[in-house]
Image (cartoon, rainbow, N blue to C red; front, top):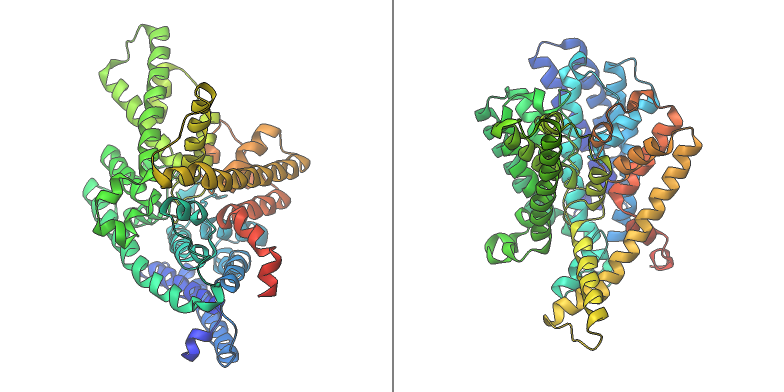
Length: 503
């Protein structure tokens, strides 16, 4: 094995964080903002020095590298790396306390997107570029971890996918038998070109819609990573109008399903139409906006006899579609026409529905959070089968071996994860309410953090308390929820498995 392959993953992550600081320093330098460029450059020098020292000290060690050891490293990365990433941020924005700076970087690295910057226009554009760049890198990190770490361990949604496909990613041979580092390198070679290509294509399309270059780059990184980090208060103020929302919606659909990162599905287009995650996403994004549109339409009839106009009706329909898609992909930003829909009908925001959509989440092995669509699909198939058996107790399920597996083993595993997810949410709610937050506010903040839908917290209520108004204890609680939501409860349970420490 090459010496550089024996280095712990954290050394690579630390070096990558230095590159992010250098890119932000160059960005500020090109904008003639030298006071901001210097802290990022000094942080880059310190980071690369630390990474080099770690590499020299650890290059001759021969550890037993497995997917499980990488899972421990991944958890340590989400906990420790934001401490280092927050150093230049605190230097550039002196009003940030260490706790708030840590909260910002955990939010970015986990692609949550929660922020204390309520007036982003008053913050240096380099800060927004740095946050979006960290979130974009965090999106690639979770894709790499899903393919290279969680897939061999059969967690992170792969426990359901293995049932659907009839394979077992982690049960054929012991995990230690495979070289985990080589697997990560192979996965990076597959994922990174696609990830960069999607971002570049989105930047080009956003430029065509009329967005400025820097705004288009940040919006593209926020969309592909589903972080929702923008240099403006909302997507409507970023420029581009309706066309930019349409483009973002298309790429959100691509980001919410793993079909673009899976070479097998790219080669065989027939598999895309059979993808249960994509079909369920289409049903949600067609059915729920239709219901919301009817809700607003009925409200408009009750108010003024339907004198809203055909244009307002279309705005209401698009606003419902984009907002539903945004929340189910844990992007968390509302459409520019969402307020038009509410003004047309006079009905308030259905916050409970949006919270439920955020809990659904996107596909397996994507940058989205939540429970994941594949688990919801398994529970749906099991539920429909049980309802059929109530009327026909002696009926045979049929539909092939795959359908039988997903109705039994798949639904059982999905139910376990759902219970663990709800238990984690309950603990977070107990802690937040114990710290003095009202129950409804604690529920919104807890769901936004656990599902990695940070911007959605501000959409779920008309006048919510800002993230900046929370105390240090609340910030640290939400930080822990973000890490748990990103790693998933099954991955944390796997760390406490006795077999983990024996092997």
